[in-house]
Length: 336
Ligand SMILES: *[C@@H]1O[C@H](CO)[C@@H](O)[C@H](O)[C@H]1NC(C)=O
Ligand SMILES: *[C@@H]1O[C@H](CO)[C@@H](O)[C@H](O)[C@H]1NC(C)=O
Ligand SMILES: *[C@@H]1O[C@H](CO)[C@@H](O)[C@H](O)[C@H]1NC(C)=O
Ligand SMILES: *[C@@H]1O[C@H](CO)[C@@H](O)[C@H](O)[C@H]1NC(C)=O
Ligand SMILES: *[C@@H]1O[C@H](CO)[C@@H](O)[C@H](O)[C@H]1NC(C)=O
Image 1 (cartoon, rainbow, N blue to C red):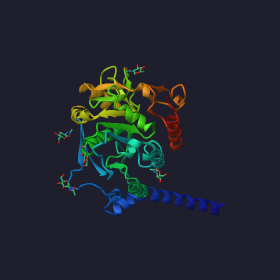
Image 2 (image 1 turned 120 degrees about the horizontal axis):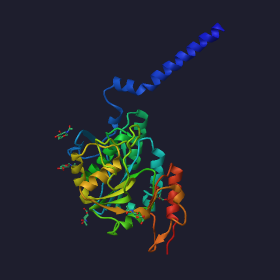
Image 3 (image 1 turned 135 degrees about the vertical axis):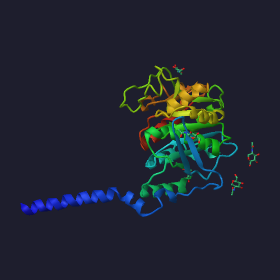
Image 4 (image 1 turned 90 degrees about the vertical axis):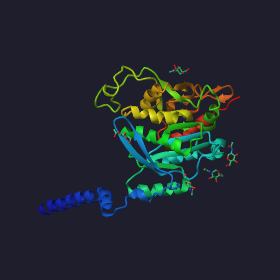
């Protein structure tokens, strides 16, 4: 009995010790050496070009850098830049996207560099993850790594980074698409629609428009908006966050206008609602071309219009299998 109790004590102590050491390994390593894990990701860019950016808001400023950008650049025929919001650990989701809608074998416009697609992620301090990311960067050259840290509250900064990146690295492209990594896309269908002035304009934002949405006033809610930040009963019309297209001409204006407003948490309301309203930016309704749920991937929704598939993209693809499946269904639509 006594022995048993003593044994338990030792086991317990070793578990606690193990947990303490293991969980703090990263911190111990960071303290023990000056160089942090993210620093061995090299910046494959002209060093003389300044790489520091500041997200200016009325109440706060945040400086950030692009630690890695793709070596392959926009070309003068690049019309659309797509930046997919991803997080460092989502390796298999990025791979599913590379294997489906972002694959040059599946899209002539990706192949021709008419469309440039990359993922934007935040730097990580975990050495194992950094190592895997470095391999991924070498192999695919499609990651933008920022020094911002990952958090829902800071999505607004990530969109700032997307806009700065567009302005500084792919200015000539007519359009920037911001898209989450849980979508399946008919790439060429979407691209071809950009030549229709009613669907895309270099002075406008396109996507699903939300009208008359009231702010959440419960303090504990993720989307809480204090009246001190925004006092009106409804948000201005804004574009649904998972996918929106921004025209080239308004990007510098949006970055400039943001300086006059306090920083928000809700990224889509801020950039496509508050800022867009202040600048009187036109919003283009893509509702008929986008699906929001998997259950909408049915023949009665996957229709044709004027000899072309009506739907460009579907949201809420949870994981790589759904991305493959959603993509297959979008591409399975045969018209005329
Ligand atoms: C780097 O950029 C500077 C100024 O933008 C330019 O003068 C220089 O030639 C560039 N160097 C390389 C190696 O591209
Ligand atoms: C942000 O930076 C700008 C320019 O450097 C400065 O004028 C402004 O006071 C700063 N704002 C805050 C809240 O720190
Ligand atoms: C695009 O760039 C290539 C190579 O730099 C050049 O030869 C071509 O004239 C350019 N095309 C346009 C439309 O500017
Ligand atoms: C495109 O297809 C070729 C030939 O099947 C294959 O070798 C290549 O890996 C594919 N590229 C991508 C990005 O999947
Ligand atoms: C967008 O278009 C859809 C379908 O035509 C329509 O039901 C919806 O009311 C429109 N939304 C706005 C904000 O105009």
